[in-house]
Amino acid sequence: MPSENLRWETLEALKSSPKGKLKYSPDWLEKGEVNCIFSIIPPVFSEAPVVSPAASVSSPPVISILSPKATQMAGCIRMCEHKHKAKAKAALSLRQEQQERLVATVSICESEQLKRYEELMELKQRQEYQSMRDMMEKETQESLGRQEKLREEHRHRMKILNLRLREAEQQRLREAELERQRQVEGRERHRAINAIQEEVLQLNQLLQPRPSTLTDPALDHTPYITRGNQLCSQVSEVVPASADGKFPSVEDLTVAERALQEMRSLVRNLQDEVAQAAERKRKEQEEEEEEEKKRHEELKAQQEEQKKNAAQSAKEKAKKQGLQTGADDSTLKWYNALQDAASRCAQAFDELSRAKDTQTKKLKMELQKAANTPVSQIANISGAPLKEAFEKIDKLLSSRPVTSAGKTVSTSQHPQGLEFVSYKLAEKFVKQGEEEVASNHSAAFPIAAVASGIWELHPTIGELILAHLHKKCPYAVPHYPPMESGTSVEDYQNLFDSFLKRMSGMIRLYAAIIQMRWPYTGKQGPHPHGLNHGWRWLAQILNMEPLADITATILFDFLEVCGNALMRQYRGQFWKLILLIIEEYFPRIEAVTSTGQMGSVTRLKQFLETSLRTKQIPAPRSELGSAFFKS
View 1 (cartoon, helix red, strand yellow):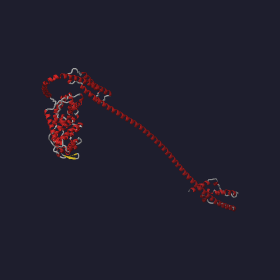
View 2: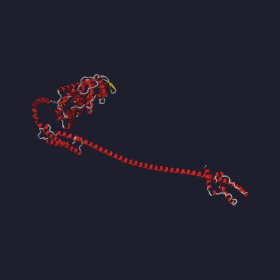
View 3: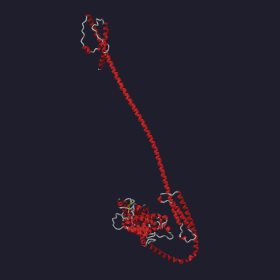
View 4: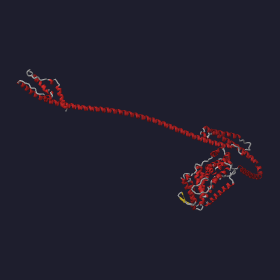
């Protein structure tokens, strides 16, 4: 135990002290040193623990021979020793208890001090940890602050960048809008200058002397023609070339407008002079009128004879040159026969057409709707709808009932129903060419496929289609209707110019019909109106004098649609025909074409030259192949 250890340490310390080193003398009584003994004993006994128990046990008692008095004294001494020893033991026990209490107290104090020390160390550790954590939190906060600052700077920079990007985009859009506006204005100016140039060229033609004024010596066209040519040159100089991609400036447009105004003034002045000359001439004619009346009867017979001779001479001359001014007799006979057949068909349903009762009128409207609706639904989308439209038309012409607009109708419901439907169907097919194909060239082939299939199954429809086509587009014969008396060649051509787009659509439809076959009929016979008719039409056109703008347009339309099929059918003969057109017929087209009508001529020339150079005419892009009819 700790108390025992401390006890022995205490005894060892007492033993080592000066009192523990005292020695007993055997003759201390003889020497009269009793007082010294009593004065010494208590400390000796009080310090008794300096002698270790082991020494007291193992040491033998000291025996000495003393006098009785000395023995008595020794007994007293021993009693005193025992008494003092007991006191010493009690004191020692008390002291040991005190020491133990002291040691316990010290141990407790040391334990408490150790705890305090440990608490202090723990506190220091916590303080250091808290300090480190505070420092780390501070650094974290500073880092977060720096990051937030960087993010704020980044957001600010992104905001500035986005602002600059928006400004740049807005600037780009403004520039694009300005450029678009510039392009629009430039194109408008270009169109305006082109229109001005066209009008100037047309007005310049009016400055040329007419045959009626050539014999008038008082009217000189030379100054007007010279100035008109100068104005045409001024306008031509300010018109930019198409390949340059440039647009005329405002100044160019101003120059062209001034030239146009001056050209109009020239024409007005010339017309005034012509009117004055005509007035003078009229007066002279009135003066000569009396003389002419006298010779009228005599000259009338001579003029009739001269007309006959002139007509015969013109006909012979045309035959020598290989050109005609109209269709030949066989073509006209065929044309008239088709028109007569169409007229007879129209007369055949005259009663139905003029019916007044409500029931018959209602039936007529239903029949017409049943005929027109499937033709209107023809489109180049896929083969299935095309086949459906064909079957509806075939059923209607076969007097079988069909459903139209939710109602069932049949041509057998009226004796004249079949003739009425046949006439209206043919008329509708041609109208589709006149309207639909004229605005959408790709529509020609699906309409032609259905028309040729119906033609093959119902030949009467084919004749009516040709009759309607020839009536609306005489160029499909080909036939140029004769001019009415008093109509000039220029007025005659301008009359047909207004119909040119519709004529083009019908020629394209005709060119598609002569090469298309309906794939589902199963017939192996020849086409009811095949490529031989296309070759005949082309040859007939080349035997006729060309008309300005019209001939070039219909030739281009026909060859673009049907040229590939004719090339594959006639091979070398076809290329000879193309060469003939380029070398001999095309110069005639150019000769009758004015400057403002060169668009169609240029297009035809490029087509012919490209075809002859490559020895190839590509198939039309809208031509229907086998894959289309399977879709």
